[in-house]
Amino acid sequence: MLETIITTTTGESFTLLNTLKVIGTSVILGVLISLVYMKTSKKSSYNSGFSTTLIMLPVIISIIILLVGNNVARAFSLAGAFSIIRFRSAPGEPKDIAYVFFTLAIGLTCGMGYITYAVIFTVILSAVMILLDITKFTEAKNKPMQLKITVPEDLNYEGVFEEILDNYTASYYIEKVRTRDFGSLFELTYIIDLKSDVSQKSFIDELRCRNGNLNIALTLSSTSYGDK
Image 1: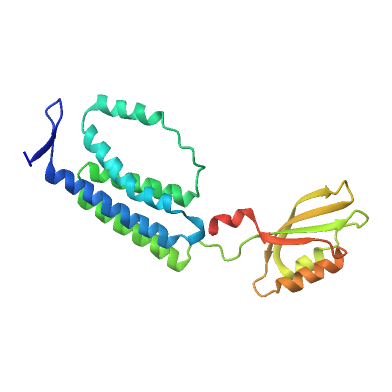
Image 2: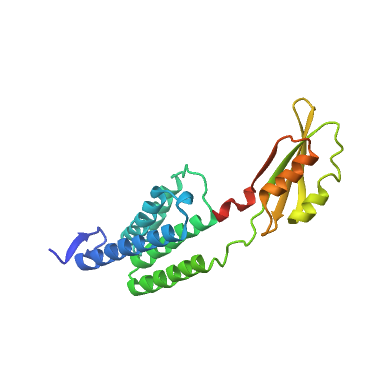
């Protein structure tokens, strides 16, 4: 009785030892992947729900693979069931999607019985992710920033700020020009790459002298949010 816990209509059976081995390995590897994800992500860029999902996915997939086995009809039935599921959360960062595929691959490998291969694969890829995080290999050295300068309508803004931008930035380009307050003001939006040794306060102070001390905003560009 303990040797076989499930007997299907086709005569296939799952032994207690093999089933516990697959589920236990999936849980352990899922926890390891979740820990690596939390370690390589800053606290502001992940949530506990996604970390829990990384633990659950390998177990769920491995159980599905155990149930499907070599039964083609059952596989198509499960594929049809999954096709009606809609994921309502917005797509995450590319790294988050990669971790989802990572857990799916581990669950698939465990479910097919390749336990040793799943362990080796998890350890190697986890070590690679930690190494990349420690060495900051993929992190951009200079993060682009967005500069918004408000100027009065009677100021010819063309060429006014170029000298300052040349002194304080490694590169820059104007992204957008728009009017504000019924045309009484212009707002210039630049994407800039500040030099590493410059003072942001001095940079803004010099710009204020050119725009009549109107509003100036310096923020991280949307293109750099993925590096958080």
